[in-house]
Image (cartoon, rainbow, N blue to C red):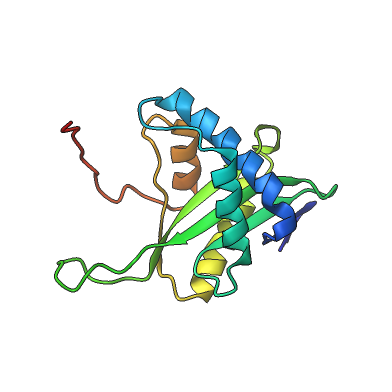
Length: 164
């Protein structure tokens, strides 16, 4: 998929180092939002995750990258399928997934996130996924604004309580 000087494509093993850097930078940004909720995962764990994800020939989940004209990866989007609810629960099964979009700071505002999200929606639709969600921290106003601009709406509330 081309958008101006941007290419969005499935990630490959050659992209793992870039995916790791994007994830670690994103973790640091999220710690600034809420250090009690977020952490910086180990580089090894992130490397193993992305290496396994791009090597998965079954393609259960997807990861797409955006690269600029110079070939540098400037963003990524993960599409992580949800499992259907067990038969004993009341939720109806619906092929669904969660999207996680990350764009380098200096590439924001250039259409990278929009191109990634469009490609992720196409990827999901091609695989029968009919619903996408984006788990956004309420303080991440830029992410809320971004996904809202793309038609994502408040899908309810997730309430929680520490019991330890």
